[in-house]
Amino acid sequence: MDADIAVLGAGPAGLAAASAAHRAGARVTLVDSAPRVGGQYWRHRQGEDGPRTPVDFRAGHAIWHVERTGDGFTTHTDAGEIRSATVIVATGAYDRQLPFPGWTLPGVYTAGGAQALLKGHGVVVGDRVVVAGTGPFLLPVAAGLAAAGARVLGVFEAGSPLGFARHPAAVLRNPAKLAEGAAYLRVLRRHRVPFHTGQTVVAAHGGDRVEAVTVAKLGADWRPVALRDLECDAVAVGYGFTPQLEIPLQLGCATHLDADGSLVATADEHQRADVPGVYLAGEVCGVGGVDLSVVEGELAGRHAAGAPVPVRLVRRRAGLRSFAAAMHRTYPVRPGWQTWLADDTLVCRCEEVPVAAIKRSIVDLGATGARAVKLLARPGMGLCQGRVCGYATACLAGPVTADDLRGFSTRPIAAPISLGSLAEQHVEEP
Amino acid sequence: MTTFSFGDKEIQAEAGQSVGAALIAAGYRAWRTTRHGGTPRGVFCGIGICFDCLVVVNGRPNQRACLIEVHDGDDVRPQEGTGHGC
Image (cartoon, each protein chain N blue to C red):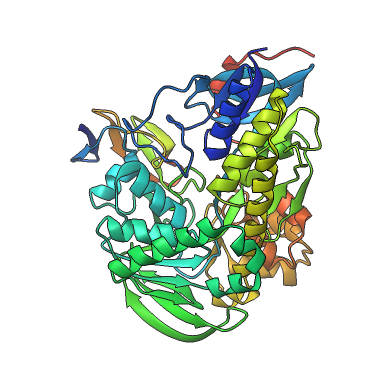
């Protein structure tokens, strides 16, 4: 065994888990594909790292498979394997996308991508930027861009934060969340960035890069009711998040649909999966933001290391989860987005599968359900393996079920690995 | 600062920056064409998820520009289709 506990992912949840387990006396190995700790949220630039982590940190190790071996687990990475008795999966999430005409134009970014370029690399994606989609994450993205000198032409929130008013208990239990939102709105106001609700970008236009967008005022189900064009040189879009479930699914962990319509791994009150020895923390078991991720990470780390768990942590998790549930109900994706699509709009960016091909697989070829659509029209079969188009394709194929999303989230190989480095790895003969 | 070549241009980047971030900072938005439609693509997700920003680095195609860090003297080239010249 290389470690008692392997923590997979060095974002907020993974760092909290590794730190809690280390403090409880466990031998911990922390693994991340990035060169530095922090994950997508605490994204460090080179030279910004704090003190060295006291645990064994395997930076730049992309995990491609985790399996149960003997009395523990083997985590296979592109730079060797790690044997541990227990694993804590904290692999986070990435932006959920809805396709629209022109979304493949260079200059259209995911909201998280625009944020990563800014926070991780000091690069502002454009001079005249439009931020659109749904969910509270649009606010820090727009505020960051505006503070860095971009002219943010507007934040177009398809939903409305007023929905939080229907969940007063969850909001009152989490006053810091309201203060955080208000702080971002103050930054936007200071930079004269308009915040529009019930509006979003329904098309992007341009030749070899984005030059303008069409912004729509949306009806209750997100069908456009009025349109206007806006010249811009960059767009940042996101409609919530998709948890990264490759590893829980490889290990056979149970998954279910969360309130936001994303597939998530099922954790019990100890942050345990239903597979013995596997713990889950952070966005993999439900999108809830950094505070919830840290609490879940600490709980997972303590439980996995056999340390006592303070009641205040369990209470704090309950409070933050109630806020996450209110957030999911406040910012749902409404079905009218499908009316934004044209027949030639690409749904799958990798295999270049247009809406028409997906419709044909359903109408002419009789595909029932997302799996059949995938087999007949190839969405989700390219390089990204359905990470980007999986949710949208499942929606187009009919009402989304957990099984549809499992079909787009199951990846026996979670990260690209060359045959050469695969051949170099030690393989145990059966 | 580090310097790398992009086609026949020399581009300056900050230490630790990704190839994709450095190309965007230099004004580029696209450096790949798709396999079927031949349409231009650049960074989309920025975190290694979408594989849209593929680029040829030191002769190796299909590198994710958003993830791969710039090294002094790197030879970076746009990628057409599969990047294997077919």
